[in-house]
Image (cartoon, rainbow over all chains, first blue to last red; front, side):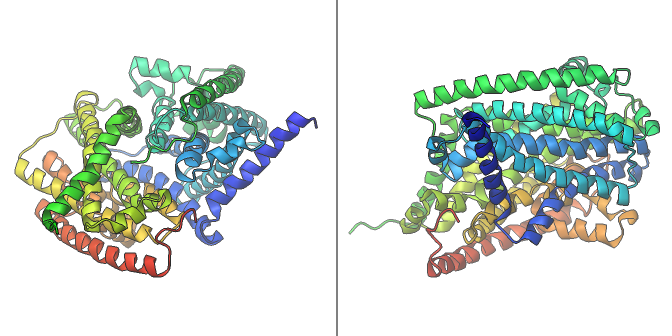
Length: 290
Length: 291
């Protein structure tokens, strides 16, 4: 391993370790486990209650659409956690812990450090998604059907989706070099774009024309499509037409691959630009708490 | 020796603390986009869930129910704005002030700590009202929700009782958070989705009392009402959607409970602030940072 690769690996490894400590060592392990379960299960239960109200007021029941919503919501945990885990790093270090200046001058790659911190969130998200899906299958009758021959496709799509998300997250983190502490607005808002336009909770066809066009331009739309195709049983998946059902897997994977590369390159460029501007404006370690 | 009227002093303290938030916010107008516009997207997603389920249904009953449910989500979005502000800018605030080293300055200032908290609440309500207003406007003009307002005075009474009790709860939490370290951040994070659930921000809370959810559902519905947002939201929904009556209690009962909560939370806030300030001083945690 050459010196540069070693520096990146070291930055990633220690940042991931630090991220894990920040996430978990504030309490006892059992309490942390409960904490990690309650949030996603509560989020899933909101959808259950939204669905239940339709049955209670005598409108209808639609099991396939419920599975569509539930599985989309479960996998959206990856989106929310990965994005938040990435773009909150700069503001957390700068405003809350006020350690950015020390990490920044240490011999690490700050870009890789952000990615390392995000890795912890992805790990926790994996746990939350598994719990949410398990709860859905065991308690709510959600049907999951991931066959062995679909696993490679699922794995490749999953990894490409994660790379894309980290790329988008670093782009947002770069912007936060120059913004005040808007991390909670961003935490709600940016995932909200994907929540709304990527067909997470409803088929794209529900959206107005411009919303559908925007949705088709977002790579995560194809990520959710592939995930649903591989995870849902065929009869339930085909019962909720999304407008993308005729799309070939290869095309969807290619789109994801191109998106991952574009966002990776964009994240490097934007990170360097914003870092330069923040240094120039003296904003690298500003605090904006009011 | 100059003497200062304590009422005037504390009113000045309220204004002084609120002023920082209002002016501080206006120095960084980007918050209007980040805190006002962006969160609308998440709310819109929940609106489209209902629209998705109702796709292709055009009977008058279906349209009436859809209008009510979309309106419920929009009103839930308005209350979420205030709840998030209570969590992140009230409950957590003294903890952040401690982390930044401002808390000791507040403690030696000759004012009531309640005035400080009240100032934070007033400033927070101002900032959050912008987001709430944007959400409401989007509900009417983007999602086409039709509200039917039959009793405006009752609506105003319920809304302000909800706000006072919510911010009273936030004031109480803020002193409890003083004793915590990083648990404070995680506690606020924990009080998001679970409270969205038990307060029925996206669905009528009465759904939980349906027999299929058994005793547990009823326990969650009534137990969760200790967070005033749920009761306030339920009453506001009943007042704005009189043709879709699906309330947990009557509006009058809910208003009465909210008024009781106003007094209870404000008194508890005062007591807990005094007690925990004393405890924090005794244990030397008042100025300890980064734990």
